[in-house]
Image (tube, rainbow, N blue to C red; front, side):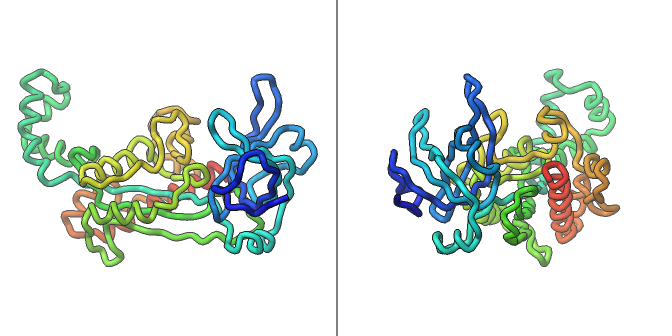
Length: 339
């Protein structure tokens, strides 16, 4: 029996053996009730979908994420390739290294958060927009009262709120923590962790938004939504769309990392959605952290509502640290939710 063939070169219908990292396993049943598992596997040569039928599962130990040797054959199902496993057994890291000639590619969690500011040119649009809204009767009563009491104050309030839309705002910084996915055991293999910030350097200097986006995309180029996870709080509703909308504004050709049109977005863990068991309701990261006994990322001088003032006070280093602290808190919440 042949084996250790690069995944892209596996022929159909030939019995083969492979050494892989299984990164995810889902137990399922056919419409007739027949048990099987869908699994995602990868090694240094690529990724592969596995199917393990109940008869095979009954003859072996429990299959779970880890290092495995598998035998089987590649088949096509609904125009998608899948490796139907006939036998599987755990392997050691030494065996994997011997046959692959490299370290295993383990699934990673990228926890991220962005800080945004309103575009300076947007200030010119606020006055005419508010006037038009009032004239057409589209202004809510409470806003109408604020506007008629103090036009300048309401214009300033609306200007600062422009940071919440990529059409009127820009990204000041993107903080990312890269680390292991909690709850997955790969035989004691140590997985490094690191933090990066794009947009504000370690000395507190602001960097060009377009260049920061390009560096972020370069950093994320190896993200695999089949095995890795993007983690964030309201990341589906805010951070991810904002990033790629700003890419569009800068003429950066970038394919979105994940498909947000999916009902359950593959490759994303949104702590806000997870708190509500998938329902699209709001809860702040700070409230979840408090409920879980996790120290807040907010301080007396730094929080989301103060980013505008901190920026104009030249305190970019404080914004950078607050951005990182948000990511650290999100990571701790994520670990509690899935660990």
